[in-house]
Image 1: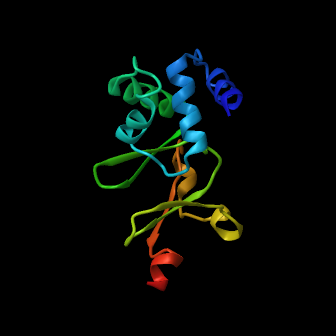
Image 2: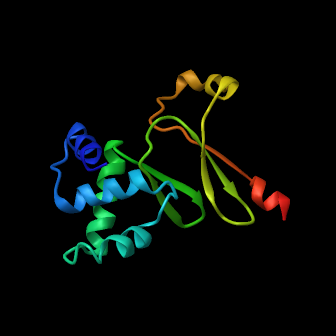
Image 3: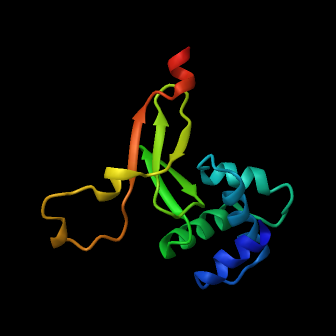
Amino acid sequence: MREKAIQRLTEYGFRPSLQRIAIVEYLFTHSTHPVVDTIFNELSSSIPTLSKTTVYNTLKMLAEKGAILQLNIENNVTRYDGDIKPHAHFKCNQCGKIIDLEIQGEMKNLSIKEIEKYKIFEQYYIIKGLCPFCQEK
């Protein structure tokens, strides 16, 4: 995973520092769509020089360049995703999990009236409901 993290950083024009590599590697190995605090808490014990500000600034820079996704699925909560290929996110209203869903068929060809007039930089699919586990409860 380390090599993949280094490749992602250099591909997007970032110098692969110890902190940046660890943050990207964390996103690649944890598909939980973590928040800054979670990433900081998980990495700070192995990188004592890491600060929460460094994590925040690194994630912000990576998201601005498109190297990771910044997700605003819930009000006032910013999450991050290392998977930058087009996909949807499902948030369970009961357990709170956010799950990646592959986009197939018609969603890829979604037609929005007059969309050609706009210059699109980002596109998200967010679906909310009950996951299969919570439906069984």
